[in-house]
Length: 371
Ligand code: PLP
Image (cartoon, rainbow, N blue to C red; front, top):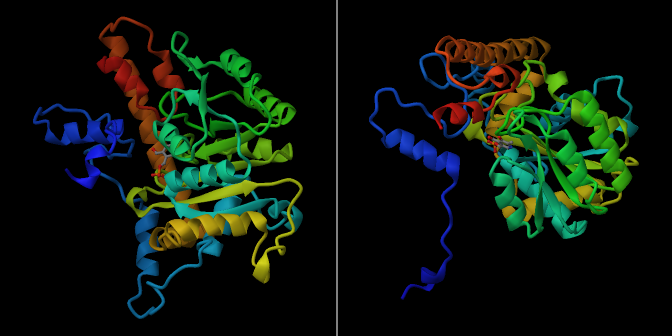
């Protein structure tokens, strides 16, 4: 008998298995409800115009450094630009404010979720992680692997097809100090239903009062509304309240860099930490611990995709062109929703379909219709 014959069975990961079923299906009108990726009107992937421009600027066979290792923390200029994008920092932001954020480049949003879970589970030892029901399925896997027991909070009111504010507040008011609360910063996956700014304010107050650790998953900044600042509103609000929390940032959707695995984990502390405490004076304790975890896992994140993001965000003209590309994607998604809504109404489909217009980026509506 093989040594490995006792391995436990692992359930298939839903989006990836749906994708496999889609690929092997021969029906001419098949629709892919698996992995959430942007497609053009012809059903093809879209490398963003600005990404193609950045690639043409970066690639230079004479640059002998182009395949060199990064540092364990990652590409620092990329990280500064990534945290500016999340927190809205600019040249007027004081070093004290900036120093509240410690950032490490990660293997995309998934890697950022994983690294943050690992840091918190080892060193803060939360009793519970509160995960919205429903959620991106990988949250369960990530926190299970990190060994933190999970409880769910009722995120979605399936009747009203809205964020379940009362249920969420009731559940979270039972959370204990240092419990982690997973929050989707915008475009909640899979429901597409987000809290209003006033509801975010109450969630932030509750986290502050009970000493909870918010953990923002930011997978759709700019992709949701077309406006990167609007999609980061909740995070910036929590930052302003001087809370301590994590942000897992992904560039998969908003740059169309899915397979390049570009992301960052930002750990927000208060007050701002002296970043020169660790041996070697390179960073504070948070940074040293994050780098230790990264080193033992995979040494450093890949460099190619982060170079593209750095090139775009670090150049005013290219950044403007990125906003245009975001506009193309978010407008098309909204137009598709309007078209779908119009058709459902025109066909007299039983039920009410207004939520198709209200929700952001989600595939859940399609699943509603198909079932
Ligand atoms: N978090 C959420 C809520 C997501 O929807 C996704 C992707 O679908 C991710 C994180 C992570 O994606 P990636 O690892 O490609 O950045």
